[in-house]
Image (cartoon, rainbow, N blue to C red; front, side, top):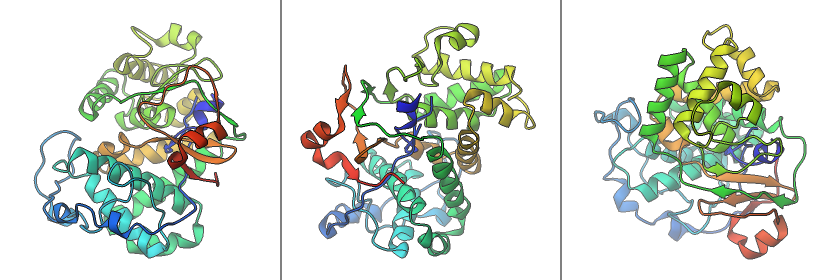
Length: 342
């Protein structure tokens, strides 16, 4: 469980829990990268809140901010951290608008999601910027900023040790947002567990199934079940997102998670740390306010918290045995996102 908690969103990123990602410490000049594809930004349109992956109407109150586009891969070669609170607020607004824009090209969606993920991490460890950022983002995002900060800090509190090795994982593409939403909805309809909670668990545990591999406790699958729990609550294939999500709903309902009064204790049974419970509920609140946010969260990257800082594990990462973090950075210096983990 510790290795999964050292990865991700919370970021990933983020957390039998994927951990949160951090952001880089060394700003650099990428003005030309910020200007890339700027003409396309003015042509984009956004839609009223609705289910991710479904048609919606144009919403003039949520126009993408325009220039600059996200400074994160794959639009740029590497992420550039914000140099001020005002800059962070402006870039975060652009990123959040773009991830809700279903007309955006996939590379822009990916970059916007990664940008938002890393900017939230930067803000979480720069508390002096919080007030300026809150006032600098549109009102529609202010509650979400608080929720992301709560999630980031709560989930980071679960992780007590860092590793000097990267795990023997494979990082794969997740199921589509539309398919995932359909599985969450089935879990809610069948077992009474909020679909938003199921989505938040899927995010925190494995980045929506991007992480394929065992935790140190022997847990596996998109929702991270140890063999005994899967034997009691699972049906089908533990690595199948549909089967794993339904098993999580079944488990939570059996422990009182099908009621508002019982969800916190059910989540505590899932991972017995108060920071985990707080983090799950915070992320659930984000997609509850606007389901389109799921489109961005599904595109968050896996960021692993190590003894030398934050390491990005992109889709395609595949190791059959642990890898020393310093070796990984020598081979992939662009994936070393920063030396700080708090």
